[in-house]
Length: 220
Image (cartoon, rainbow, N blue to C red; front, side):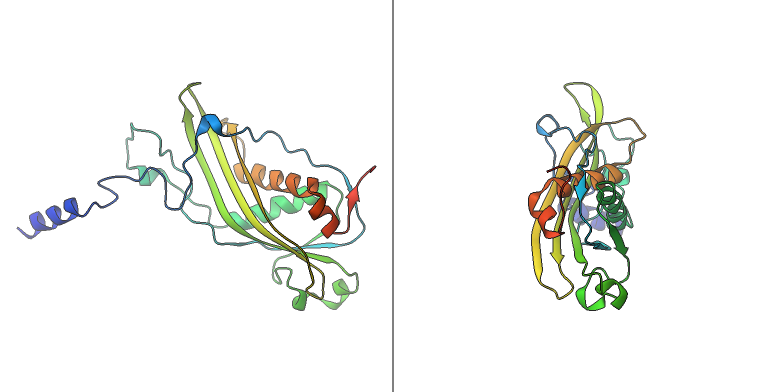
């Protein structure tokens, strides 16, 4: 009798497992047809001798991410199709660092100090570096069926609130960057790497960021 009462209560409560959500918590529902292609990263060459200290990224992004939520023929619950990256923000940080270095910028990674001006070591402070810190505010990676083309595509979203300061704490740039797009599903592409490099591409193409870190476009 108690089990029957409990079952009736759950059925009337509108619990999410009896009516699965259309997307994971805090996720964006993508319109695949309106989502632009991510494409391959194109990192411009920069000229700059000023050291850039890139702090390990923080995150306020929601989890879980992913999940084939647009599929109706689940063999298992939709929630079992979701996943999360335990260190997603750190992975993004590593890939952005690689992308910035590919542009020619001298980048030093700060894992412990997170590019806080007061925590910069004397030997580094003496080089008058620019300090870049960032917080991942959105991170999403979905695999979605493009019904028009009858293929699966991967869709990625990365939003980062970025701050550039000098060693005295003076703010040179405070700006939010967003990377969003689709990529053909091939089972091989590392979406976090692609998103990180696309963010690096956006940073190194932005005149405001280039000026903030004391660099210039190479050859111009």
